[in-house]
Length: 317
Length: 317
Image (tube, rainbow over all chains, first blue to last red; front, side, top):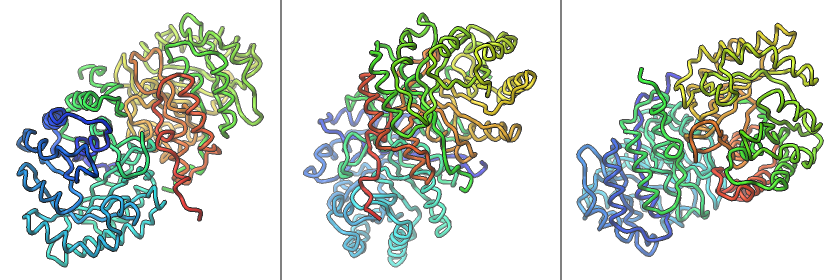
């Protein structure tokens, strides 16, 4: 049990992942209110919006306006997502983000096509252009991200060997251009992972690249989300993408009404109960989760915001 | 990872735990329909009802009628719950159950009082009467159960030493009367457990009583349910109380709108994905979970019934 990390960094992706999945329009000021509330919880990273073309994700048409209006809090890192060079340009142009470049790959052709309109081979062929864009826009290049790494609704199981191979392509391409991959972000984009698979994949990646930081991006589509998180923590993973209230889901994943990302406050609760620090004020985060529910106008799957934290039951020591 | 069990036995408690928590009346024939549907899923154990006094749990006033009307399927074990000798008598009188006696203890005085109207000391003093009742009614005495073993909404954290002490009282009392405790059922009645606590408690219990079967009864009040299940599986636990759809909750636990028991089909999904057998047909169980949602008339927290199993996405090998 000593292999559990002492501190876990949570990267809050709710405002981006959550809102892009919502059907009805959400007023810009409500999006901004949630980002500002999250800034006050002790979270050190908030992913604010997605600079996708409004034709693909209409909910994100106000990305520039959200960027202009949220308030940067010192000590918090603000990020945004983009699916192509034009999106990156737009994100940079706002001047509001602490952008860190990553080479983005996907583990299956079909999901890659749907998300980025390129096959895996086409994506690999275009990596030098990804690098050139970051250089041109003066965004530091730091990592490699891999989507659909645990399974795909279009292509089924994803072999571990392919995950390692694609991560190697990203790492090697960065190296050829003079960059070190400081972190590897591995995403279970469609909620396929189970805890044993997490252990195997994380074990293999850490064995091969022990010096890189691993970021897991997990969804709770089939209820195994926190079990997967626990399995990752046991393997020493200390950085996770999570979403307040369990907001999220992927508009291209081919299923509806399924649960979104693993829930930030449920993970904060679990970590704190196990003696792992997160730097987050759980009660403030629960308040933000309730605000997120109000903003989207329907119940969210997060549980600790309904069950309540345990602090009120504990007697003073 | 070789310490994961090859087969996990799931004890379905949804019809009992789930319905007792519901506010509105549920027609008897709908309860019977769910029990009968569960009998066809491959589950080998179904807890059908609770013979509590209707003054305490009005939802269970039709316990005799449910018992009379559900259909026993060969190979499935049917059980019922009772909070006192009168309840046990009523369960026995129906002739429909495979009752197995257990000495019931609770780890905190307040929760014990609320559930059974007795303090811990009063419960211990009355254990010989519990035994006499089972003997008089010819119900085999097999186990010890301990509620509120992981924490209590009224008294806070529960020391591990107290859990071990109370289990020892139950085991020793059975031994004094010539019975062996074949199993120990340990309940996180109010959803306090975290995976590390599960590992510690299960480890301590197994170290002290390696030959007894452990049954964990877990709630998912704060989202850690499946993480706790995974931690238990890693410790070799192979018997779990679970509820279809995540039905459940405890009427005496002092919180409302909180999630119920750990969800049967989500656990079946996680086990199968990890290569652990359960004997359960996941698709049939998902259909039963949808029926459970219809019966209670509101969404249930189970996730795999919304996200869907993965079988339809996998290509034939």
